Length: 164
Image 1: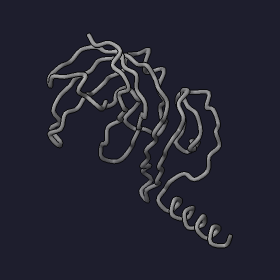
Image 2: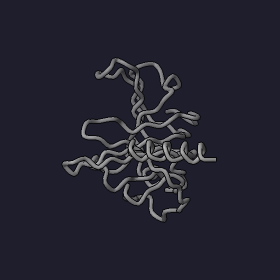
Image 3: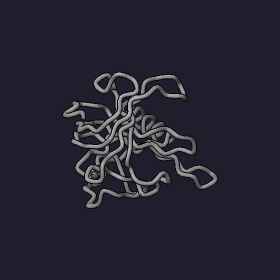
Image 4: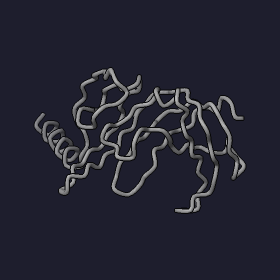
């Protein structure tokens, strides 16, 4: 019994030290826009479950955070399939239309503005490289990171419903 208590204590300390949220409340937020400081694993925002999150307050007052939401959403918007100049990998950038922007969570502290775009993977359904147009997609695992230097929002493509 003491071994189990010791193990749980070590895991809790490691998780807190790493900036992870340990507790789970299961609250449902009424608005799609929430403060990262009010969010916990297990909460629901825009119908999506907060599956993972990381929050770190920097000494110079900058917030670094990442939130991954679990749950499927059907969204529409414009896509552009290209090769990244950063690491020479294929990227599908998906920009949400106005109606779809109302369906996704927004983190109030995200200085990049509202969640209006993300990178989709896998990207083969959008090929060939250079393709662009409008599409309707089903996504899961929407990740909203925020750091001083960019990491793009991302989501897992579950299904390409329509491409035009």
